[in-house]
Length: 96
Image (cartoon, rainbow, N blue to C red):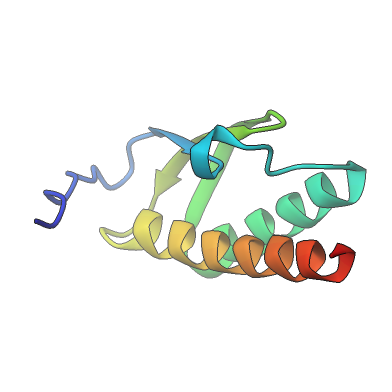
């Protein structure tokens, strides 16, 4: 059964928490944090979702985001998650 769609208040701040799979670490070194911040800036600008604050922890992320359109938050998180997941998986495969 699909998850019920969340209500997005355009122009209002939203607290977003994103965790690693099984609460595993998603940041292993400084480069991982930098890549995430670069991608966050890219997708927030592209999808018109202002980042008010963020906190990057080794196994999860907190974001305070104000979307300017109804789908801004979802589209930003979709692009950011896909980009960072692919980066992490490629990096992990190279170490095997």
